[in-house]
Image 1 (spheres, helix red, strand yellow):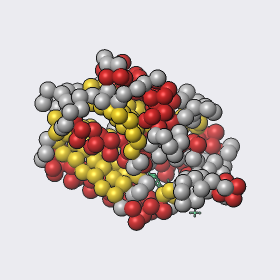
Image 2 (cartoon, rainbow, N blue to C red):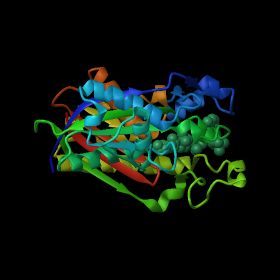
Image 3 (cartoon, protein in one colour):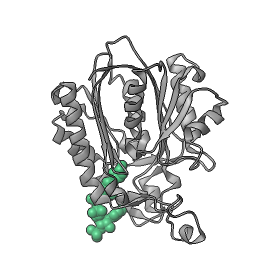
Amino acid sequence: MFCPLKILATARALPPRVLTNADLEAMVDTSDSWIRDRTGIRERRIAADGVATSDLAAEALLAACTAAGIAPGELDAIIVGTSTPDTLFPSTACWLQHRLGLRGPAAFDVSAGCSGFLYGLEIAAGLLRGNARRIAVVGAEVMSRVVNWQDRSTCVLFGDGAGAAILGPGDGSSGVLGSAWGADGNLARVLYQPAGGSRAPATLATVAALAHTVHMEGNTVFKHAVTAMSEAATQALARAEIRPDQVDLLIPHQANTRIMEAARARTGIPADRLFSIVERYGNMSAATIPVALDEAREQGRIKDGDIVAMTAFGTGFTWAASVLRW
Ligand code: UT7
């Protein structure tokens, strides 16, 4: 069902420090060519010591509010998709308010891994059907804090960053034409952070075992990501009654060039519509789609009336896709 809304503005916040594949060659047994061939990644951004997820989220949110011409206090709700919250509680969205000295807007996190931004968009679309008039959806991560820097199979993949979008009801010409979302919690252990929560609280032993870092069966994630991202996109397109060749821009979750390309091909969206930033930022989990959206807008790749498809997959497993008329 068509849900009228307008993305009034987008913005991004990326830490200035660049970690290249050459830098990683000096840290673990890897090579620039392996990383580029298997993932498409050349470099990623790493947050400075002391910079938390809410700091990047606040920077992106402020810039997005400025671009939308509103004050953060005018928002009805702030939704932050993240897997790397500042603390287990309160939410990163509340820490963001703390950082900005903001009081009033409802604030909460969405824990859906790399699907967090699209989950947030789906929730925001529902809220805009009610009384809400201005909602911020943010994807923000400091993945470098949960990466095991001794594990070459994961540490080369991730990066830090944040992206924000300000949503309003619009004039009826733009909105969500179709969407799909889902999850399969049976596969939770294929990609997870084993310790630090109520199941395995932090102890000297869990810290010594590096159990607070990303544990991932990369191959399994790869296969499920391709299937779920393409199926979600296909379902969202069918609900939108949009053919794959009518899509002007496809922004998939940016984990790996091969995953994005395979998901695109299965969905049938022409190759020239795929928008990729993974080469420069790596996998920023929930932040990849809003950062890519912002760069695509800046480059003039999205104009009013365009059909924009987004699809994501992440820990959980979770998946989500959304087809918008811009
Ligand atoms: O956003 C969702 C989160 N995660 C993802 O999306 C990640 C999904 N998975 C992937 O992107 C891929 O599975 C990886 C990029 C992680 C791995 O690529 P792969 O083609 O699945 O490689 P593999 O795991 O099958 O490993 C192939 C070989 C292995 O060596 P052997 O056993 O063949 O001798 C690995 O030990 O590559 C080795 N390897 C590496 N070699 C150099 C693994 N990591 C590295 C590395 N540098 N960084």
